[in-house]
Image 1 (spheres, rainbow, N blue to C red):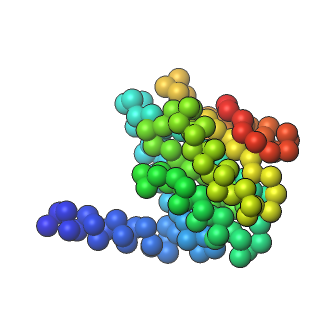
Image 2 (cartoon, rainbow, N blue to C red):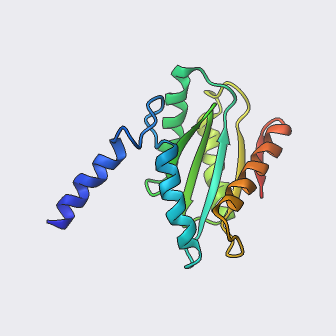
Length: 158
């Protein structure tokens, strides 16, 4: 009974309009914030996870879904891919350290090479136990992404 209800609930969450970005079909900002908050708290219990921000330039509305789905299909089912606006996506890489995030970024970059309207940039930051506020990890990823964008593309680690 519980297993059947869980399977139905998982499908409902994945497609629920309150948790889905209408332009891309990916998790929206609310969905991201809910999952990120739980992961950050679990980080203190030894859960390894990494935040990967992806910038693709300024895609057209029709390209947003194509690019977002390419990111989703390139990452693992356990990873949460969210559209956060303006051609930017955030991927929560569960059970992944910086080396694993580098591999994930390489895969995403290869998938987006011919479809992104601008340079593909990545900002990657891994949870560290000394982080006390959840904003610290996101700020680190933001700064790494800004550095990659300033360099004209590529990957930066925080």
